[in-house]
Amino acid sequence: MTAALPTAWRSVLPHLRTPMPPDRTPESAGGSAVSVNLPMELVRQSVLEREYWQIPAEVADAYRRFRPTPLWRATGFERAVGARVPVYVKYEGGNISGSHKLNTALAQAHYYRKAGVRELVTGTGAGQWGTALAAACALFGLRCKVFMVGSSLRRKPYRGVLMRMLGAEVHSSPSGLTRISAEPADRIGNSLSLAIGEAVEYAAGHEGAAFSIGSGETYSILHQSVIGLEAREQLAAEAADIDAVVGCVGAGSNFGGIALPFFAESAASAAGGEPPLLVAAESSTAPKLTRGVYAYDKTDATGSGPMEAMYTIGSDYRIPDAHSAGLRFHGAAKVISALRHSGDIAATAVTQKDALAAGRLLTLHEGVLPAPESGHALAAAARLAAGGTDGMRARRGVLVCVSGHGYLDLAAYEQLLDGGLEDEAPDGPALLAAVSGLAPVGAEREAAASGRPLPTAAGAWS
Ligand SMILES: Cc1ncc(COP(=O)(O)O)c(C=O)c1O
Image 1 (tube, rainbow, N blue to C red):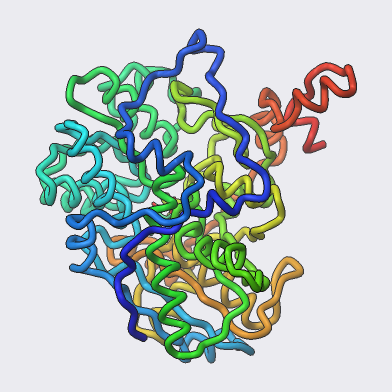
Image 2 (image 1 turned 45 degrees about the vertical axis):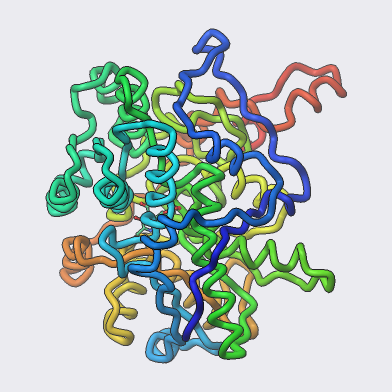
């Protein structure tokens, strides 16, 4: 299905029913969070209620090498899962990074270089984000340093090789290069939040360097809107009707990218039609949207940045190891969380066994090997199209974003084929403990009104 490359990103900020709760400065920082060297245009994109943002010419030129991305009706997959309605796949795996992450990496590299930054530093889980940033830095002439979750790098060493091919310096996290990585392992774990914490700390201490993040920020969700904007046009060109949109959620930029342009369109249109059901598919090992609390939490293990209002399972929770490293993040982006809180998006949790089984069906019946992360969205889409899930069902058609390819994830599929795949169920008491110190969003208002002391997020759970 054809489409033109969008000329502007589309923001959801003008359409939120209630304003996003403001960030909070962490008490541990003595009132001043580490200042992240953020270009003004990215700040503006994060806060202004402006609907359209022109895509800069050099970013659009770079996009043209791999966009518009393909969208097709997946009839083979439909038959395999017993779908009663059409399933349309939007595929973001066909670029050098292998995932949607390049959409924001290119934009960020452009804005940071314009702001005079010479090196971008980041943390990566599955490695797609690190690869995307390395590719964008190579294209725009910046140095790149990547802290990659150690367990993930050991599982996928070729991700590291690809980033190095693209000129990046790659460190296994915990790296030993930063203060936070020297803390005891049982305190810091080995999650994406630690890798991000290392990158924040490193960038803050080095002249000319800036920390860059791939997903949870409002501006990265804006950049990803190219996915949904293209998809809307591609579906319209074929008069294809859908009433559900599915994307997997790490922090939320992939889901936001495919889903929020549909929300914005319906909110902005004079007729105000119902938006499709927007379903975030998360990993059952990091179930922030289905089992988390809406509270202020850290975005990384150092807690050096501001506390944000998010659905979270607690940044201290040790997320069980799983193949979908890109979904092993404790919280959802504040925009995604605000929309979850207002009831404008829905969520469902998927085990890695189900995700990889759905990924295998796409491989067998569509000839496309998806990333394990994308398998979560495919499993959720299959359920919506076949019979329904968590009280939700598609009646006309489903659009699902396949966020990346799985060529460097074949070890995960090997385990699926050999029957060795285990799903570690989240531990209820540990989840409860991880959120017990967090302040629920809106707690001050309620406490002031009732005269009672501030509640904790664990109270919201019990
Ligand atoms: C292939 C793939 N899909 C989805 C995700 C999750 O994306 P997001 O953080 O944008 O929700 C990742 C993150 O690394 C990924 O690599």
